[in-house]
Image (tube, rainbow, N blue to C red; front, side, top):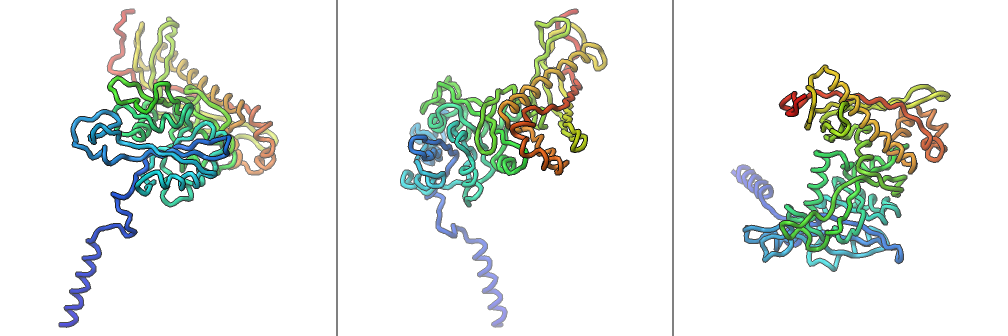
Length: 406
């Protein structure tokens, strides 16, 4: 009988421990300030880092549930987020100096956006990356971007259609990634891995702050967005060395196999002032190293599939007619032009963002040992790559003919 009672007590104790709730370290949710986005700037005069943290405002978010405008909740029209700032000689010191500006302990795991000013990017991002990689609360899934413009302004700005500025930035990156290929969407984990690779440099997307961005941007229904994604920043090591345009970034996505969807405007063969809109929806990109240590070259092959999205004739878009084949050749040339534009830009800045050096390092280590000391300054700026681009138009939309008569 005693054994049965003891067994019953053990079962009850086990169930009580399983079903009980609570925070083991007494960090109750209502005592935490959830950080949604963070930005780093650099003060050259004092040699210190400046940090901006955007926090969720639970008072505004937990309002009456009625109609609310962008950037404000139901709590009397208050903004759904709040931005605090601090300075420090290192990124971690700046983070610690945020303590005392918020009535709640900062909670970082929900931070989804990491913004870097152009100053801090050119100064070097290694210390900031180390902070996120080493810290227990930080997550490497954050989406980094280099800000062209006033970092403080964009950290305080609201986005139309979104409750918080951080959510607006996060969704802006995702929407641009899936609908256009003008922004290299990468999380911090991938960038750190790229930085650690031999013979490959980082590419971080650019966020351009528009002149309309201010603390009240987005409160009205007709307010324009405070920022836009366009182009990228090229790095050599952990330091930014220059900008690339949106078209050049599109060329990088073609050459690196990162494009999801993009649009090409191709002139009609018979009428150069009229254009056909072709949307790419799948593609492959491969690089290969040929030859030996004495005579070697790199080959890049890109193949894309596309569909006609807009056609203003004349002619019919059959799979095997001359017009379709001509459009395919013109589309392939347009893709080639974009890839070459980005390759030339990377050579100009001596930033091997395509990873040609890493290809040599992996495929022919002996060759890499011979050329690695001369790669950045001598070999890569003069590197010739054999580029082949193929384009297949697989779909013409719901119709083949144009509304325009021949």
